[in-house]
Image (cartoon, rainbow, N blue to C red; front, side):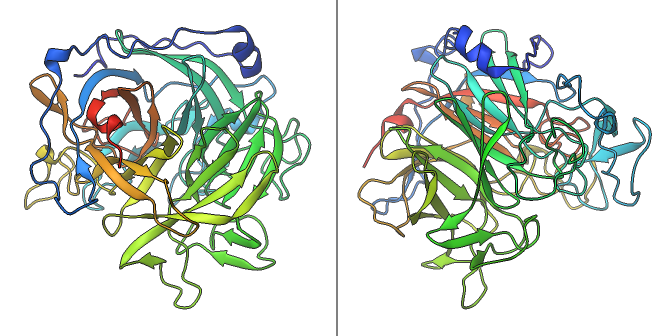
Amino acid sequence: MDKRQENPVCISAVLCLSALLAACQPAAPNATATTDAESRYTGVDDAAETVEDAPRRYPAALAGQAMLPFDSRLQMPADLPSSMRLSGKFTHPELEVLTAAGEFATASFGSHPAAPRLTAVRLPIEGQALQGFSGMAALDDGTFIVTLDNGFGTRSNSRDTLLAFARLSFNWQTGAVNVLSQSPLHDPDGVLPFEIVNRDTQPRYLTGGDLDPESIQLVGSDVFIGEEFGPFLLRADLDGRITGFYEARLGDTLIRSKSDNPLADAGVARNLHGGSRGFEGMALSSDRRTLYLMLEGPLADPTTLTPERLDGQAVLRILLFDTLEQRFSADSYRYRLEEPGNNIGDFNFISEHEALVIERDSGEGDASLACGDTVSSDCFHEPARFKRVYKVSFAGLKSGDPVRKLAYIDLLDIRDGDTRFTFPFVTIENVVPVDDDHLIVANDNNFGFSVGRTLGQNDDNEFVLIEAVEFLRVTH
């Protein structure tokens, strides 16, 4: 089901989210209109493990698809520094700065070095891309809040990229993504305790050279954003003004990235293993008091300096933050990765004790278009093989325990009538429950650097509505 050509995308941008949240109450998306009972896929993976408590695969069916084209643009604030009106100037691997729009032809970062898959994006671009949705949460009025990521992947190449969050709604019948508001992140009060790129301007707009937002939740009028480079937790108001900053902690011990944390290494710290693999998923408890922040990469074992493991499997820590007391807890949980090299993309609760987690490999593209013996630019040398949404349980756990995986759906085998639909993106970074029967999954399209859907074209911002009745019901 490809609606890219037949469905228009509606874009309207308003800079103040607070006014819209107070005044606008759009109807919740119609989650059931596109799939009737007769078309539901009811098969279950016969090869699923039968070991007691092993997660079992459940069926999933495509109920809707919406696209925001990859070349969409943010509405730039009138007072945005002139240096940011041309973005992507620092992305060339060999040149310090690009000076004119369209100088650099980009390719997927997942390409084989000998056969780059071009994206049809040329950098720099005039304006700011509306792309890279790396975290998503449902709001009470049926709309959704999303955060844009750091831009082009690193602090050094994203210094001219504006950070922001936005509010979206979807029309699943037409495939339209409606951008209801955009809120640029800014720090006029100097809340961040380090030097930022736009330190000498007002209102001190934040850039991808400062932070890497990866997850988002709304608690009252506070917007909480999980960040990867520190890792940090940020608090902002509904207009994007920074009002709080918290370093990751496990009790009294700081958790820090070894490579990208902009703060000096002071105090007792426990490092992440490898580079910046900080907060990737962030779920909000059903009572809306506690944030559960999941790291993308393992902590380094303090003795061996190897990735933290449990029963031979790499594990990710889930830290807890009390939004009322504004502090991290000494408690934590763990998440076991199924295979070496896997990581997580997003994390959201669906009930008091159960949550959805995206776990994925680093592959890109449908396996039906895999390269054979010869690698070329018109095939995928490392296609997507493992893209799942797990349902996990926290029930009965004590601090330090691993969450229990109850079930999963395979994002590479979604039923679309009598055909198979895949979601074969390298960075699937959004999973949100819609109702008792449906969930939304979306990608981070890595503007300029990701080709997972259509060879020769950068991935769009793609949202799919998935019907997964049995999966969402199952409990242990």
